[in-house]
Length: 263
Image (cartoon, rainbow, N blue to C red; front, side):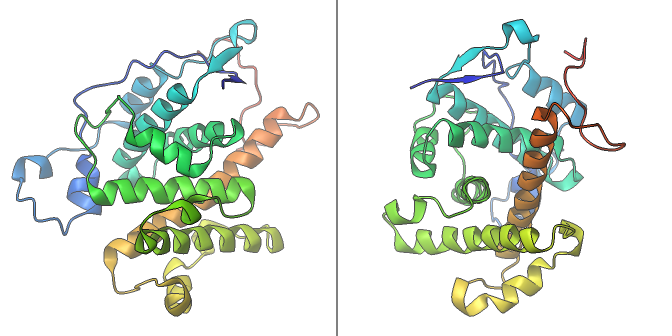
């Protein structure tokens, strides 16, 4: 089944990219012993955006109708995840927004979270130019689940269909974190990531959600899951503003389309 979206592909994926940041920063406890990898720096943010726009190219309105297949959507999720990971240390969020929008396309097309994960497992493209490590695959699953949770306002089908119950626990606690942020944000719209204490939340939920506050990798996963949850809500707000014909652009807010000559 295909869906109509206002983007035009093809996917000219960039080869030779490694998950240098994840290897040297996120998973610093890895015993790889590969000193050469530790010297690789994440690419410049403008370069990353240029690479992404090579295969997510927005055209003028009269050319925007395009059928996206599940395979194409999967390629977008696969590639934007890698690019977003490379920018984790910079605080640069535009690439992470590309990932959120890619997962949103999957959600809107009726692809469930577990189906998307299966499609990613069989995806022929490899933006990292190597198989993902176990922790990297877990991080991608967490991110997908958090975005689906925010988009649907409830948990997806992922946990019920996982074969490994330990994996289900690993995923469900991050989904619960996303749900907590979603419900709290509804009650307190002024809540921002900067005022949300992830570590305190994890300590309070340690017994029920199996968080380990003393586990630095798990706390880092939780921190990025919280950032993703807040950013997904921001993307939805920006999308609503752009789609509302009566909306006015506010200083510092998202640009109002169309922007002639932007692409």
